[in-house]
Image (cartoon, rainbow, N blue to C red; front, side, top):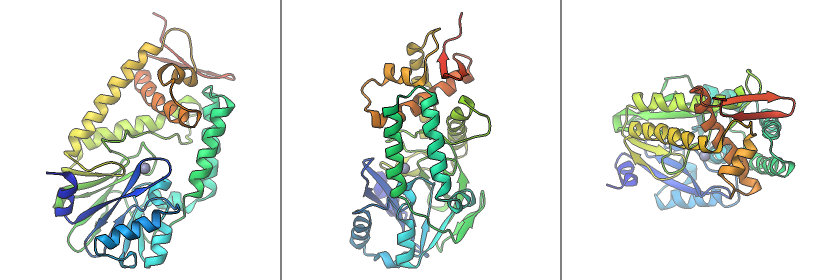
Length: 331
Ligand SMILES: [Zn+2]
């Protein structure tokens, strides 16, 4: 059976909302008490209209929403949450780690973006690519908002609705605040951007304590660990992702993502030899078709592959005042 229909049978409607950057972002209406919206779409022109229209088609008014539940910090998921909560008088619920992050906005976001721009430059990106990244992030910041959570969930805590409970578990890697919500009674799990079989999960850079390339690899390592946990711990069968269609067998898809990541990592070895190369030079070899605006995403993808190869001793990293380079170890 179609996975959207399976979700519907379990009281969950998927609403795909438009965005200017990616094809669409999912929010989900849980028909329960409180009436709950999982994620919100971007704070962007037609998104609120599209959400209202979709709700009306399902027989609900925006004002009826009682609770907005958030999966992670990225603006395509939290952007409209503040407006929806205000219009509907709804509560906002999220994991305590996301609540902490939201409490530091907007200064934290600008500082993170400036840090990331400097790291992209350290990985050899020319000024045009760095400027394209900065422009993209400035646009993203404008499409965000600052929802104020009134329900803060600790790790493993269950959010009780009338007919179900949703257990909040961190699965960081795509961002530091990725949270999955498992509803065991209905055999489903909101996986956010942690696991979405139709759209590859990118580990975004975040500042860390280790310094240099070690920090840059940390999100990819966390994503790999998180997928490993989902592969063995996923208690539920139906996955409801942040982008793309729902899917059955969450654990099997987590394993498949790990396998695919490994296959892609091994393919990267073809682009590497004993000559140290920057991440930007490598991305030109493997993703020569990328526009300046998307080169940054290709660099993140390669970092995730390098993390795995470095972990297995197949690649060496070198960093000095000229920047960071990667090579195959001399035989
Ligand atoms: Zn997303």
